[in-house]
Length: 625
Image 1 (tube, rainbow, N blue to C red):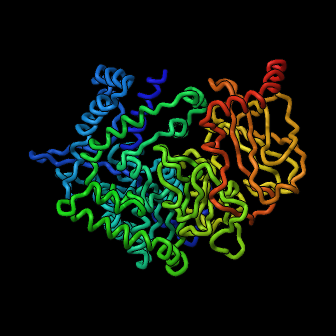
Image 2 (cartoon, rainbow, N blue to C red):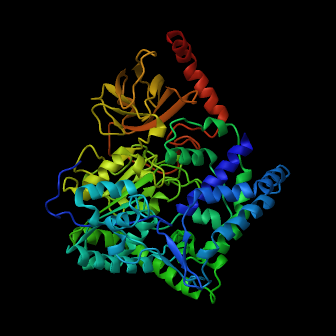
Image 3 (cartoon, rainbow, N blue to C red):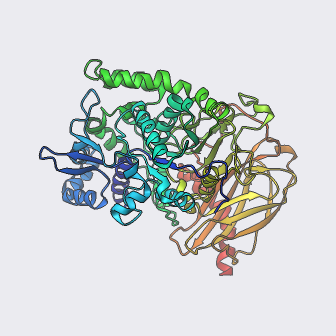
């Protein structure tokens, strides 16, 4: 079972890496929307010597499966070699196929494309949602962020939603230059004096770079950057330093979140350390560099604090002088301006720039840093963060006063006062990179931000607080107190509201609710009364909060979901008691390597905890069924 899971994780990660109703807004008269996609979103076409064209960048699941099956014997031998400590054999098998699969998108040491490769669509006119539909007869092909594109189109028309195609191998400055030209085309084509931008991941870095260089042109009305890779990704450091240490449980949750798998399977690997995956991927690094090491965008993805180190290690100063020049400009000139340029856009240029980030997740490659699994939080938002698994101490105060507004997250892990946009950045705890489409909160927030004037900042609507915990259906359960803002608990609260997040008509049974950091007594419902899909229950509680003011407490909800393979699930949610302005020092441990969803990397401590807290409710449950 261990090896089967390992194979699935390896190829799932390779797959991920390769692709990686509201009121009308009268003031903007429905400006056209330009979608700036994530890394690898644009289709690339290669022109051959005979002038025929073929698509060379897309993720074809059937083709990848065919490659895997054709090498199944070698892969089997490779896993056999792993048992005696030889990771290189399997890495060689996978690496050679990866190089072959991606050969056509190879770049030269100076960053130029080795082959005659261009984007599939080159003009705004041919890349509108409507034009692509007319070409293919459906809205699935070559549309970016399909779900959001569909909603935008419903409100403003398919002819006013545009897909920005760009060669993502280029550095962000070049991509931003192309975006500026594209915006001029869209303005001329639609007759609008401004556009709105929705961007994601690498598209967020491109958009942030565009705003920094071209923002003063005032061609943008609104720009939303979701999980933006503004200052790169720590995953690149782990990869290029050959320091990958996969967090297998986190990786499995990433896959479950992305596929909306409401059957929690993390218990399959909880007892096993699949460390040999680290060895395989570390051996794969030379192959990956061989294909993508000279993409300018890869070097813009290097976090600023390790950029110089990696540049010296991997790039020849003569052969790669052009890459170095361009990425130096990005790191030394553009990235340091994000704070001031975004503020200017909002305060001087009449724009509304917003950031939405996933936080409080360990990186899938093992770097213990606050992230969304791929992009580290400080790089995407500018916020000050405690390391993953830690929190600010009780003596810490937020860096910037922000007019007396609390900017410390309920888990005491984020100080939003240092953000690029302190009042226009939303933090979604537990939301993995690229999973916004599965978040009802996130979808509603984006649609309101883009299509209405109802939300100007994080204080405009109490339904959209600055700090929110993921409600992805794969987490099954969610809870908040009745009178306080989400993530907080005060003496006014008398009820914990528990929600069933599942979307497949599953019944959820709450088996136990336990608090840590304060003694609370929860009046649980009858165990044979389930919470139905999309329903909530009110759980009364009592307890003295006076000794825990300004402290972080944990509420652990243990549950079972009828109709799934999950034997028992547990989700841990964090709350700050009463005083919202308390803050902290990043040396205090929340709990060593325990994440926001109640997963314990230490099987023994998790097992003991569950046995102690579940024995009585389990007995009651079986008696009542």
